[in-house]
Length: 235
Image (cartoon, rainbow, N blue to C red; front, side, top):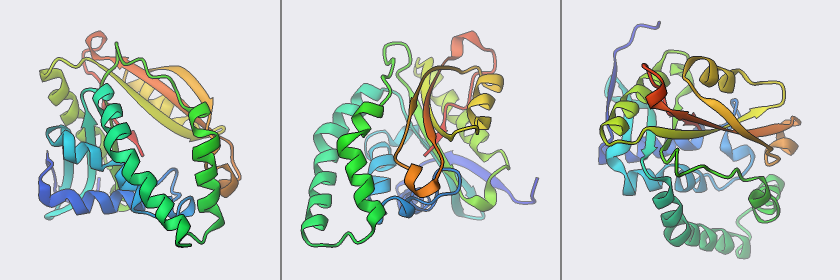
């Protein structure tokens, strides 16, 4: 373990920009979001803003020397999140992207490939969520210099305590992994009590990475385990 003092605490409004910046910089298996979509502002709009705006008490940060180096943003009711995303956030995203297309602000080929995937394939590759039994979810991101130091586990443990106090026992996570790379999903199943209930091909990153990707839906009921789970999946 490196020598630094980590504080895990609840999200405060002053943390917003730090969380959004980490969300932009971190990606799948070390691939930053800008490789797939040049409008990086879209990333926190999709993966962070809802939680900070509508469920701030379910959000937590890891702080080192007064600086936020990681976060977990949680949700106790995924149905509510889906409704808010559809009625408030997705419309703003669509208007933003349409304006940038019409004004020729998007220049990268990968951006248009991602847009085409969103229109033509994303709905076919989505996983059906068992929200009656597993309504909660969360995801986390940690800066590269602080990974493999247990910050994700500590953030997850804090969120677990938070949601169990509110009677939310069932959680789900979606993990995206390259073909042949199943270390993360295997860890959640082996060590944290999850089980894989669905797998679908996820093609959005394939042209950039040259690898096949799969989205895996994992679920866990904390009532079955004495130690529970970290309840968090990376973005």
